[in-house]
Length: 209
Ligand SMILES: N[C@@H](CCC(=O)N[C@@H](CS)C(=O)NCC(=O)O)C(=O)O
Image 1 (cartoon, rainbow, N blue to C red):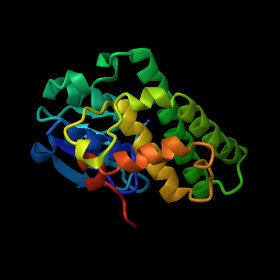
Image 2 (image 1 turned 30 degrees about the vertical axis):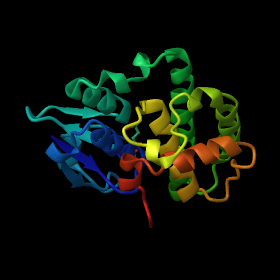
Image 3 (image 1 turned 90 degrees about the vertical axis):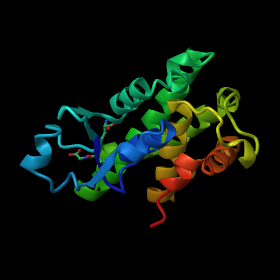
Image 4 (image 1 turned 135 degrees about the horizontal axis):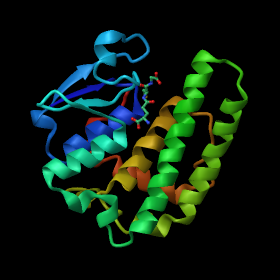
């Protein structure tokens, strides 16, 4: 398999994290690509022009980070990692939905700032981030169900896509949007992310600069 990605993309990080969690990283080639400048050769892999994109050994490709994650769970047979296999799937979907929304709002705002300067959408998405964090804080009991309480419990603690997406989304917000204040209203969420960040898949993919 080949994963098209770059270091700046939270969606690509999610795919990398999933590859590590399912022990499929060693058999995957990582191909760095800048989606903003890529042309025909990358569009033949993903006509939408977005990373991540996973090319399978038969030459077919899967785009969209959640579809890639589902595929990796299926081929690794690690169905225990799937959101729908968790004891309370509706709650895990609630967490996953909020985390995906946070990632989309944050990434959308960063891109708008880069390409559109002043935009109503940017303000709207940035304002949503603290609200999403606050809601995640209020469903924190659910997060805690797969929460490792000490770093020694981090491996091989089970972690579904919902938990990983929370960590990746808010890692991206901390890194790219440090002025957005969400942690005061969501202190437990913030602490939970700190602990989870020590998990191998997240530590190995953490962006330092
Ligand atoms: N919904 C997609 C979002 C992927 C995405 O927007 N990736 C960005 C990089 S972080 C990209 O490639 N953008 C290029 C573009 O939108 O043309 C996913 O979950 O994979």
